[in-house]
Image (cartoon, rainbow over all chains, first blue to last red; front, side):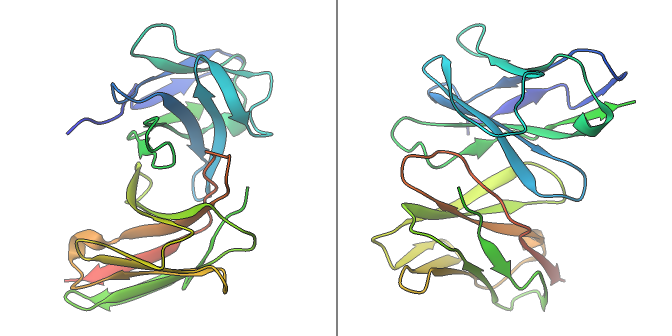
Length: 114
Length: 111
């Protein structure tokens, strides 16, 4: 069964460093998303992406964040200058054009900012 | 976008029993979805029910939707230890693909 994959599973970085989290969505999906979950808290929406542009974003998704689909398979989330409060689990999700509402999630990348 | 409010916050049952979780929301929706999360891992889509549907089944899952009361329920029949997880209802408004998660119901199924 096709699934969303994410790499790395765990990333440790120093405050102020740039990080890129990578996702490979399911191959025939056209909608892509990033969510995050700070330890012990709710899952929060960050951004949705369709047709090579951002379609929705939350207040969390400020100028420090960017997303890109650099080729036909990868979808990346970049944090330019990490802060301690960026430490969280980051989930990528994707959905089809036919059923954009049903989102398929990856296993997540745990980001630890020291 | 709005989040669902799940009730109860925690539920503990014996394996083989049925588990019922409830959800309330505030404004009109296009559909309502239920997701499961095992212990901080990725979320798994369980079922989607549209605003013009009242009941939907998928395997051991039964979901109801009452738009007049702005509420939904998820029933898991013949529960298994593997059903131990947090369950979230996600009401979704028309035109938005953003999912807003609440605190969920933490289900523990005791073998």
